[in-house]
Image (tube, one colour):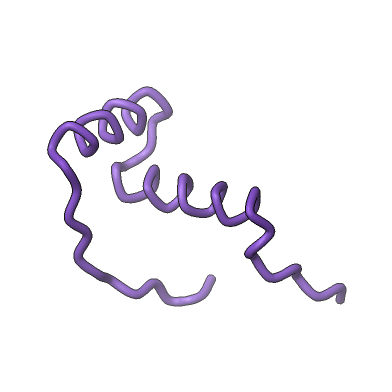
Length: 54
């Protein structure tokens, strides 16, 4: 897996609370949930690179 780059993210407290609840409901960390949300949004928008076949 590629190295992950840390960065600061400022969120509205209510938004963060909702993400934390969603993460707990799915047995993920808040960070993991945010990463999953971003990944899903990028997939839906067609903005992720397609993996190269072997």
